Image 1 (tube, rainbow, N blue to C red):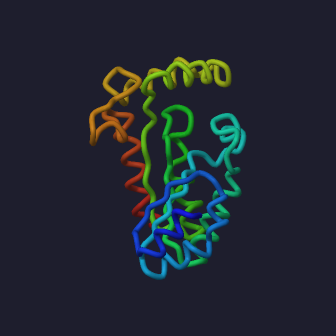
Image 2: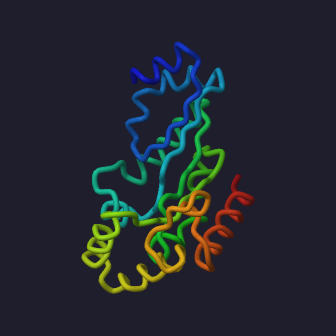
Length: 184
């Protein structure tokens, strides 16, 4: 809140990406910043499946709370976007259009996305998590992720690392393009 107060006082533009409904605590300051066109908020919604959300992000706001946050921010005049992130091929990649539709129906103005990339120790943690929760498709998901990053689990190349490459990444990119055209 203190950072937002400083931004408001000095008319500092700010962009916020969050997956937490706690952003609504600061609706008053965000509304003032929005009146001056100084704020943009993006809500990360990587699935509409609450069971998957609980497994992926157990201590974050529910899907319903995130969508309600989009709605409340929009109703308060705050520009809000939906960010499908991370898109995990074989796990949530099929949800891009549905996420876009749900966000747009609640007032989101745009859609962005990032492909999953598993850098450093994250790869080991994620793969162990995948084996534990989805043993039936863990190998497939891993190979699909590798396919989006030239055979690796991670790509650090700026401009490519968040979008991936190859057929799977192109399919996701196409879905996002269709979703933007249809809903935004």
